[in-house]
Image (cartoon, rainbow, N blue to C red; front, side, top):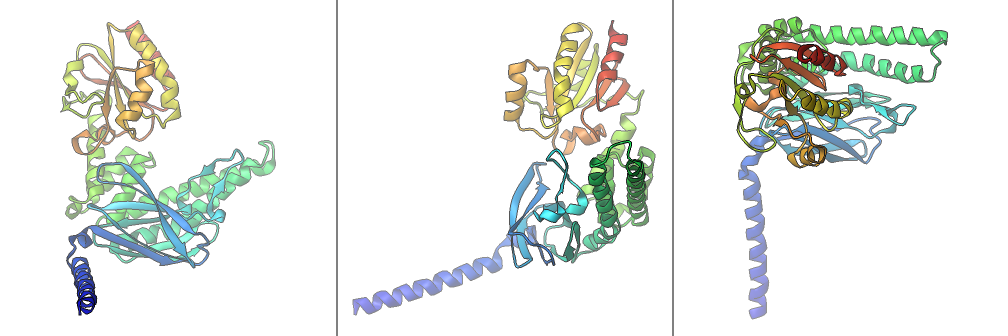
Length: 391
């Protein structure tokens, strides 16, 4: 009798647990903060894909999605609109260079936009590029409409780049291929701009403008005009806000403009910082990251100039993309211990506030706080200008 009771008790316990689990699944609130992406794609001959996105704190997240019989399905959690890309890990899509590197072409990636609650499906095929596009939401239908036009062009361009690597510069085909690459890239740029300007109510157009500004693929006046044409109903959209901050940054960091005072605790040390505390000396603002080769190469010279002109010059570093631990291990042993701000979100998004679209970027600021010069890329010219100002 006791044995029978035990079996019945166990059976009842299983039923209770099962019902409890089902109830939890129905009432779990996370569904509102989730997204699902799936697809059955011809040619997706891989066991897994790698996906990447920036989370709500700006941290780059990487993980895997398993693939079986050319099908994938993945559900994840987000709290805000998010752009994702997926690397398929299919050999034919990897654009490997002669030196063993690769071209990270967008046409070799699945790309989609997700809002919390979205269900997105990819349709298409994988050949030597991702000829597959998202659907399921208006934003992704719009994204598909432009990517369907430019991905084939981008793929042809990168294939030409690989072909050019095999040729000597004196080969007649070298110049022909180079010209073809230029034409294709110009076509892509034109199509992107037309898409942005023709879709003022599209979340995908807003994202594309944000991306183009980040990569310096659009002139400042064109970006401002496109932004001003957007429907203000998009004003709460994450990427609209990013573009708005960049547009404000364009106008605020023109040569001759004074940098408005700001305070922040987004410093490497955690101490409060006020920009006006630097007034009285020339300021070299240096946007850098440990992942940026040219930035790292120039750091010894930045230090040398700080020491050379210590009575006239102060350095303000702004790091993008590194953790405090990684920064500490890099700057402390080398004595790069001037003030470093940590690029982040909101008021601490200094990259957007200063409209930085390339690394390194350097600003030279007068003792009164006025922007005198801006340099993107190699800093030799910046150091020559400092010598002229400070000698």
